[in-house]
Amino acid sequence: ELRPMLTEPTPKPGAYHAVRSLAAAAADFVDRRFFLLGIVAAVGLAGLSAPALDEAVRARLALAVDWTAPVGIFLISGLTMPTHQLGAATQLWRAHLTIQSFNLLLMPGVTAAVCAPLCAAGALSASAADGMVITAALPTTVNMCIALTRIANGDEPLAVFNAVLGNLLGTVVSPVLIFALLGKMASIPGQKLLTALSLKVLYPLGIGQAARACHPVRAWAARRKGWLSRASETLLLLTVYATFVSTFAKGFGLPPDQLAITFAIVASLHFAALAGAWGLSGLFPSGIPTMAHRVAFLYTATQKTLALGLPLFGILFGGRDDLAILITPLLIQHPLQLIVGSLLTARLAHGVEEERRAIIDKGAKGERGDAASPANGGGRYYIATSHRPASYHTQEDG
Image 1 (cartoon, rainbow, N blue to C red):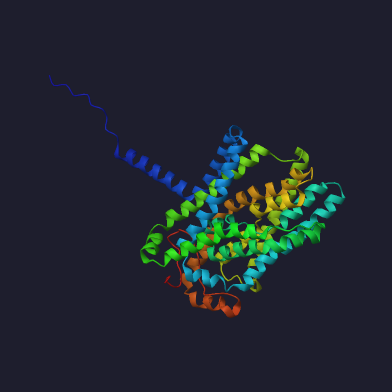
Image 2: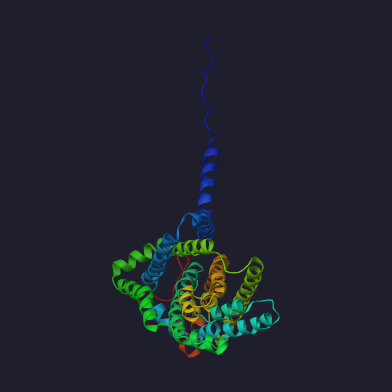
């Protein structure tokens, strides 16, 4: 008698393909949201590791990230940024004037006007109010605004130019603003700051641009643009991790109720600055002809540097007992602008891509190029995007 052989059931082809499709969808989800997921992971890891790290280790971590992140980000910018785009960005003088005026004049003035009545009414301590005004008088960030602009498909050359320009102006303008608003004068060590700015920003950017003159290097950078952009994002995530490790370890110098009030005011001012900068960037007199330029405007005009801020607080108020309270607004501002800016990148990148497609569909490149001519305060029209395959430019880099 023949009996049927017992065999294991073979998996259905549909199940295998379903697993592969699910894995591919998960990988695509992580790839598209790598930076936002990285932010969550960096903050969570910082919260877990901060108690286990002593002060010496945290200091070495902060020093390493303080140099590694900007040098790496600007070197990558130099390698991937076509030289003609950086030259075209220098011609957007109206944009530079508007960005720097917004960041170094309008924001400090508005902050002082908001803090004065709150301080007089007793809702805000005098030390916290002074800290907010000093924070508002600082220039834009050195590397954060550039990395976020790149991730959001914004105009990276415009961000690079204004990050460097803002920090150069900050050595002179910030002390004058603080004296005018608070009556406290200090001199920033300009030589030391310029040396650090050169080593962290100008030299890496120049080395990257010089390397682009070699065709094999330029071709390699073009092929590996996605990988280089991901490396730039990772360096910014290291900054997030180091920032929150320090924040979780040291805490703030205010009681919980005052900390909540200070956070609410700092956050409100930051969101108001984002709204104002976005609206202003859409006005023709600002010299911002494209969505990509507006993205760069948004990030460079609204952020405040921690690298210059902490030494400035030490110079001005190093002997005061309330130094921890004075620094609190800056310690809130730094991670806040990083988190909020990161959350905006996907929506802004989508807007840049939508505009790019609309321009291509309408055949309006030449018309927009005339609108961005030097006579109108602009350079040769282009849309500078990051690593997305859809990025394009109006001319090849030579």
